[in-house]
Length: 227
Image (cartoon, rainbow, N blue to C red):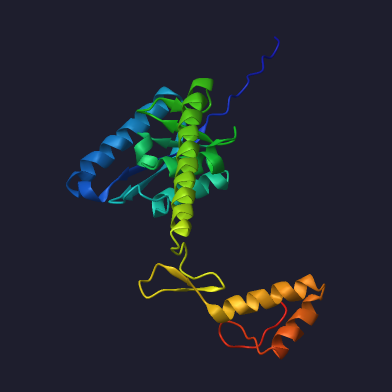
C-alpha cells in the first residue's frame, strides 16, 4: 500500500495587542475583555496561532512609546511572532503620523502582518495592503503638508526680522522683546574680516591668525581656532 505524504501548512503566529485610554478607566475591565474576545474569535475563525495578548491599560495612543506596545513590537522584531492582531486600528494608534511610522518600520514587508478585526485589515491580502497603503499615503501627505507649513511660517518670520530658533545666527542678537533679530556690530565686523581674508586667498589657518592679530574672539570671548 503506497504511503501518502501530508503537507503541513504553518499557521500564522500572532501576538495580540489591546488598549484602553486613560479617559475610560471606569470601563477598563469590560473594554479589555471585549477586545480580548474579539481577538480570540478572529484567531479561531482565520486559523491563527494566537500567542500572548499584551495589554496597555489606561494608556493614551498619542505616542507609540507604550510599554505593552513596545513589548509586542519587540516580539515581532525577534521573530517570535509574525503578525500583530488588534481589535481596531485606533487601539494601535490614533495618530496618522505614528501609523505611517509603524508601516514603514514593521508592516511594509511580507514578513510581518498587521491584522485589524474591525477595520478588516489583513496585510497578507492585496485588499488589506491596499487599505494600509492608503492610510500610509495619508500619513506621508500629512507629514509633507506640516513641513510645507512650517517652512512657510519660518520664511515669514525671517522676512519680519524675527528669530526662527532658540539662538540668534552669528552676526545678530535677540532684541529685548525676545523675538526680533538686530545686527551685532562686532560680529558683523568679524564676518566682513573673514570675507576679506578669503578674497585674498588665505588658508583657514592664515585667516585665523590674521583675525587674532586684529583682536577678534569668539562669541563667548575665547580665542579663535580651526574646527
